[in-house]
Length: 216
Ligand code: SF4
Image (cartoon, rainbow, N blue to C red):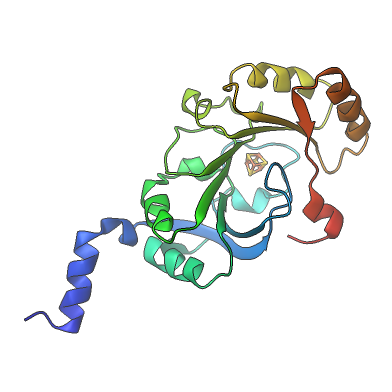
């Protein structure tokens, strides 16, 4: 007969995914502020680590993984199960620095929708309902992202970023929704984007509504 402790050990042995660990910057319950799902109640899991190094990054504290605690998948899933939301968003940092299969396979079992926010700079991994691909010219995206992108969101900080948006827009599938988003500290780009979209109707405007509201 297996006692309670041994039962737990057997369960863990049978499901190694639950033992897999990720460095976590923070988890928080909020509202998605950007892109197709703007306005949706969502729980965010922010993974540590990024090697893209965008000069205007507003998450520079996430770049190093070293200072953050490691959470097991089991701990993350337990937290997710307590949250009143249907949408889980894995963000960073650059989440694809990690193998996202163990985490997303287990999160899918909660019945919630799993989203990813990525620059696509590393090979694609994981099981997702929605993938937000936000490529950055500072590290060229890996080829595996293009067929997996549900939406393409290009941040525009200056005029030359339109060329980058155009070249990435040609690589995604015809089903990918394409957004241009002004960089928060470059308000002059809002007018540039507005005029660009009038001339290029295959693109849409995305705004960081959470920043206007002053929330996370
Ligand atoms: S990819 Fe994202 S987290 Fe990484 S440097 Fe760029 S904006 Fe920051």
